[in-house]
Length: 225
Image (cartoon, rainbow, N blue to C red):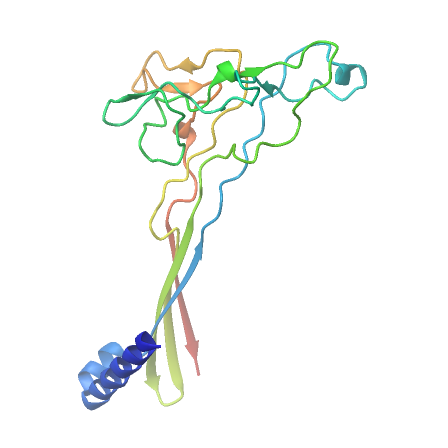
């Protein structure tokens, strides 16, 4: 309640000052600001495909199905995130990586751990086929904003000018990590300017093909008469 009251007092004093000064009134009146903000959990990453040849599902025409997480010593599914990664400062980590920490180079880091996955054993059903709710990719926050102003040209003629921005903070939207071929080693560029960077492979992120969602702006004008 106190904050609301202070805001109202400030607004009344501000309007009184604006109305008493024509130059200030012209400069500050008629403006509009709008925003659309969206924050949510990242999308779930799909399991890698199993490459086994004769699981029971294959005999029924259902395909091999998804690979399974191995169990640890306590019988719990192992963590799918990499435990062999280096941050921007050059520090090597053996704890599971947080894909949204903004602390590693996505072109030089394998973010998934291929050693924790296994194919469905031949002659058996897949024990794990549901999505892993904690196995999620990059968050993609959305912040859009617009700024507008009305100009009274004549008694019955008004010009509204508005500028709209999508992804106003120009956040980089990286593609999700690859979940293809967990039994195959990732591939790096061996020549050219990108030598040493990952080009493809399980757990790699390849932003070199182009990012999406860069900041864009639209200028809109509307004349009312």
